[in-house]
Image (cartoon, rainbow, N blue to C red):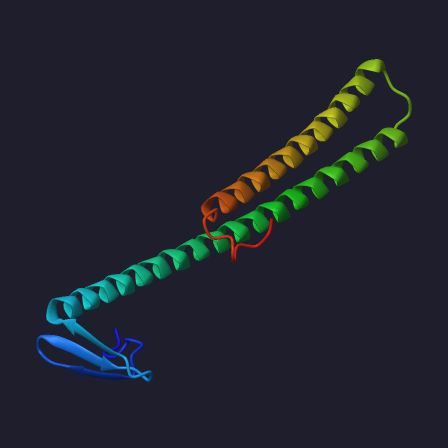
Length: 152
């Protein structure tokens, strides 16, 4: 706290009162108790500001971590999807290279293809759901202060 944080240019203090002279020749006099009350209020405001700043910094760090986690999960899901796409292409190519076979073999191949497609769908859905959850958490955590929260 600054010792002269009042917006008054000329301040003289005694042990029991404060008298100020402003540029417009107006004089303000505060009693010792009024001065002490004002100092306490200023000190309280400074404590609150420091606490809000610390809370804001923690929340910003959490937000950055959630965003990084979301990017990692999206990259992992994209990698897994690419692996599944390759497996699906290979399975289709293998099926085309094979001579016609029995219905049981074809059914097994089709089941494998369907299984791979279902797994891809599940991964896409899980990735989309996790992305929505993270966006909801971010929006919910910053509902009171959207001035710096990125638009999602």
